[in-house]
Length: 326
Ligand code: FAD
Picture 1 (cartoon, rainbow, N blue to C red):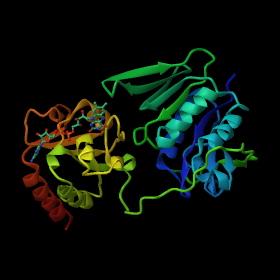
Picture 2 (picture 1 turned 180 degrees about the vertical axis):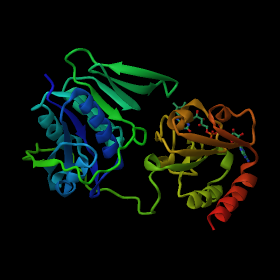
Picture 3 (picture 1 turned 60 degrees about the vertical axis):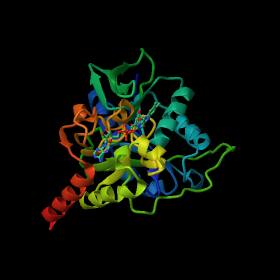
Picture 4 (picture 1 turned 120 degrees about the vertical axis):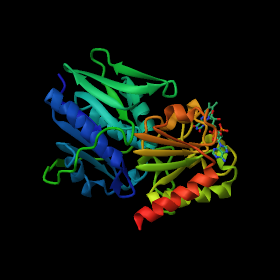
């Protein structure tokens, strides 16, 4: 008999990542459908002070593993800490973020707990008590519904920016329990984290993304996308062709071998729309494509298409945005 639903949060640089709240909101819906309490797990350094925030998004009780050694994600430390908590319960499901660290943690946890993982899910339903999770497969060409065999623990990682995040309700108080942290001796350690101090909006959390491809022709031409992005409060992404050419860092790459993004608005500039690129941005709410080739495949995916030379269109469009704002 299940006794809870579990939601694992991600805590970095003193704050929960937004996807933690999306995951908690989704897990709350399942907990409600099953009439079970929602337990949260928060691991990190200084996470205890922030743990109540998970309650605002529906977590009933937060179990906190707070230790200086847990400041950064180290699989050898995180996995036993999280697994030992879950092993004490009989969860109906475990939810966690499909972030870079979350994908790693979820795969290791699923192996350790000997259960099946549905990675990078975009929808979860609880149908007559049966949990089903939807996830894109084959680079987003198909969508698969996953179900678990009787007795198997559904482990579900949620793609950031897709699941509805409920509005924070600060009156909702979670019970917070600090758990003793008994860390194994780790063979690896995180020596430090280099944070991006440029103030750039993180791609996976951006509401608007302006991405450039091979059509940008040179690294310095991305300046026109940076200007547009600044006006729109957007992040700048890139296709693999632009990254391979050395015009942008790999951290900007959107697609199958880059980041999966889900902004409200994705503006693809000088990008043809190869399947591997679509795999990373195809579920954006609105897609605008700027391409001089009317036959470019990106137009089959775009909500709005502009057939024009990008070097004419982007500066003119940026100017219009600027005027609208003033
Ligand atoms: P192109 O396909 O060369 O398109 C450039 C576009 O710019 C053209 O449509 C052209 O009409 C347009 N253009 C040119 N000049 C102008 C102008 N002046 N004004 C307007 N439009 C103009 N790709 C990714 O993006 N992300 C991935 O993660 C990724 N992973 C991959 C993984 C594998 C295993 C493989 C095999 C490939 C992967 N690719 C990935 C590569 C992918 O197949 C494409 O090669 C790549 O996306 C093409 O990038 P692009 O659209 O910028 O370039």
